[in-house]
Image (cartoon, rainbow, N blue to C red):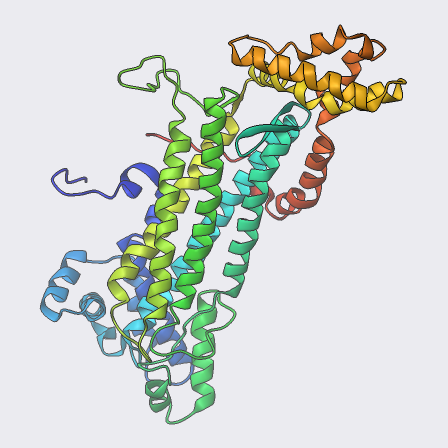
Length: 476
């Protein structure tokens, strides 16, 4: 239940998905600690330590039933979160009290849990990326042949197509997808490493049997689906892993910020709109407004996510020897919120892209306003091929272009350059309708869309057929 008298994190209450919020919840965190203690006890029993099946069964029975109030009271007394939960679990499973956390240090549960959550969080983000890539690719194909103004420096440049522009957004998401896949593939378990990473406590438990300690490490890692654990560590896994994961998330935020900014520009040009609900209000004062609020929100949350990556890097850079504790509080903030923020951003992708509204009439008008200037070189070449003098034709084009531009600056509503050239005897032989077909000015844009989707998007679709066609609602 919300307590309206204390601050509520809007990533949870407004923006992120329930799935991502539950991943970073106290329930998931502490039940994972308990699963780790069960896996450790199972492996220790299998390798010959005095741990009974009855003790393990009692631990298993209490994995998800956590008395959080009891844990709070233990922590207030002990000032140690891991020991508070050791005692809480021991209260619930008294026969196993003596073997809970046997040989382990706090980071056995805290760090391995974080790695489990990072892996699952990255997988959720990967799945959302697939949906956004699929949606943008579908949009690109649908609009691959619709010419529109291309811009450099946000000034009209050569024509592109609406679909080709969408491939630019999509390609950046594909780069992010591959980076997330690399991060998932490279992730290793901390395993059972002990207080300074030497595994000394476990070596003592197994009477100096190195092979059994190595096997213990392998078994616990395998119990959570990891192929192996890190080869060396201090008490913690290197915080470089956090830095790499948050950098990958920040990369998605960068992509989203660029995408959201482009949508805002195109909304200003009235060429493209994000979804707008039937009763949605764009402005509390200006009732006629239709603001790109989802794109603005995307940029806003993306900026927050980008700002978290340097903190993770600074934390990695300032670790001391085998371990320090100044990483603990900041990681509690940065790791969950980085995932929640990028989850929120990708939810917006999955809401906006399927609901894009394209305005071909406005796009066509903008093309017609600028195409006469862009077409002058083609008209000049066609005039030469029809027998004209290149230098003379160039001068005629220059004079007419300046006159048409001056007329527009004086407030004319249309560009009359083509009419001027059409009425000039020097260009009388030209087929203006054919020469001015906007599709003649988009180069290979339609073909590039097809090639891009075939070569870059289809392999991702084939790898994740169950993730296609995603759409998310955004409540507020």
